[in-house]
Image: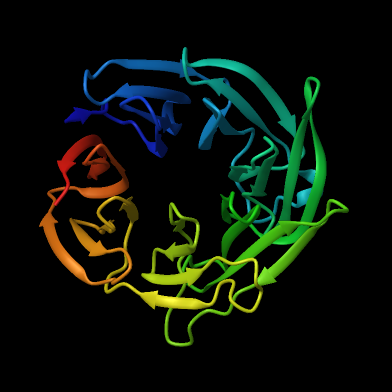
Amino acid sequence: MYKFPENDYISDAIIDQIQPIIYAINRSKKTLLSINYNTKEVKEITFTLTPEHMVCYENQLFVTLLKADHSYYWWSQDQYGAIAVVDCTNLAINKQYDINLDPFGIAVDNSGNIYISSGSGQWSNMNRYTISGNALQVTASQTGVREHSYIQYNSKLNALYSVECAGDNVHGYNTSYTIKSNNTFSYHLGISPEDNYIYWWFRISPDEDYVFNASGNIFYCSSDSSLDLKPKGKLSIVFNDIAFDTIDDKMYVADIDAIYSYGYHSLNQIASIKMGTSVNKMFYKNDKLICLTQYWSNYYIQIIDKF
């Protein structure tokens, strides 16, 4: 187990696909940590701006940087922020770019284009940025995207998926976006199940065929608009995070104080274990579950054998 220092606030964490490393953003101290969960070696860099979310692409971390607090009344035409590009090998900031949006959700496509949703302004913009010299150029933009929308990229379909919530982070609806040849977004709205809420958080499955929503609802990802975002099924619990064991056709679902294993295709619950901490993030790698957990204001990295 690794314990973070007191008073840290971990706003995001992702796992390195090769090395036994967790990257974690400590928003309260404006730092990015690289933690080897086997050796407990820790590297750290500090930003002048406030980091919040990140995504990894080709051994680089793309980190959203805030220049002001998110605000319901900070309209899109007045927003600003920044994106840092960090080299994973030496944990050094390669570049930092100013952008004309208050950044929240972030994704990177197969060509290295960066997609940013806004953290402010109620109904704001989602922009696609392309690196041009020492600046980021807006090469596509979608208006009317709900603030605080998380976005994830589906590389098989070359599409973005999102859940947009109206304020309580529960009454949401699924959306997918594709880029047309004229660099405009094609927008598709999914219909939520009538008797179920859709939560703000989700994850795309490793085969990129499904969206798993934190409410437990599962939806199809498809280039066929008649199938895209249609309900596939539902897990029996609401969850904080989900991780996939593709070899054994299983998945692991974490809620406030437990982890459950399910059959990936059957959706049947197999087993469960109790945790003494809340599992905020969870990753599956080398037959282990690597978990970012929280107990009151303390954060930990815990490693659990698959079950």
